[in-house]
Length: 195
Ligand SMILES: CC(C)(COP(=O)(O)OP(=O)(O)OC[C@H]1O[C@@H](n2cnc3c(N)ncnc32)[C@H](O)[C@@H]1OP(=O)(O)O)[C@@H](O)C(=O)NCCC(=O)NCCS
Image 1: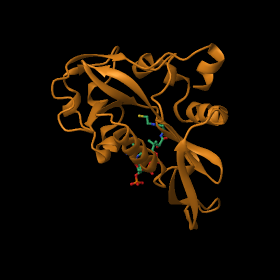
Image 2: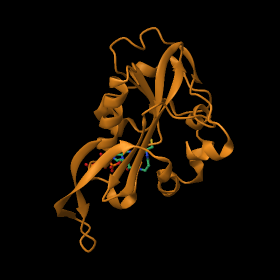
Image 3: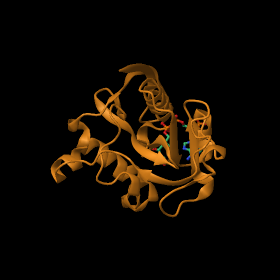
Image 4: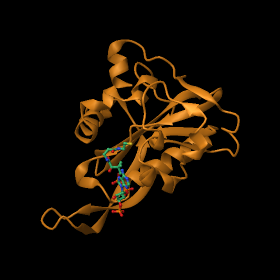
């Protein structure tokens, strides 16, 4: 678990409140399912299921230890997950979706989730991470377009948003071609929903 000091927002002024609350970044549990799905629906809407990235995740389990929840005062306020992929013959992870509940944004929770996810991925020996997202946000964590130029997602994406990060230098040096799913399949539909 990671404990951080995060501010909450004053309801009347919508300004960060002075008193810090403990933010916990921890592995997701089955009990987080409803809160996570509600958060993702509110943040990304049903279009999230149409994204090309979803073709690499659907029906599969996230990478072990890399489905994280940000919890503030016991409430899930953020989520991020990583998934095994084959990135042009290099083993890698796909990051996403990342989301923070609207009332808790710009407090550093997204950054805390990202840093924790990348640190945990590195500790588990993963060597590279890909994602589709705004470079203006993800570049601060080291993601770049340059590392992903030789790779091809399995459907339409805006190329300028297809980014990569090497956790081990040179991990994507020879990677070229299609990105394909490599995560274990989820089990029965009920389990799949909770994965
Ligand atoms: C993207 C998201 C996860 C960031 O979470 P967060 O907790 O607000 O992030 P942080 O507090 O670490 O960083 C906030 C800063 O990033 C900036 N930022 C947020 N989204 C951004 C984006 N898409 N592009 C550029 N900057 C962005 C904010 O303006 C803010 O800047 P400030 O500190 O100067 O005010 C959150 O805005 C969110 O859930 N958005 C909706 C879902 C989404 O788009 N997910 C990403 C899918 S690729």
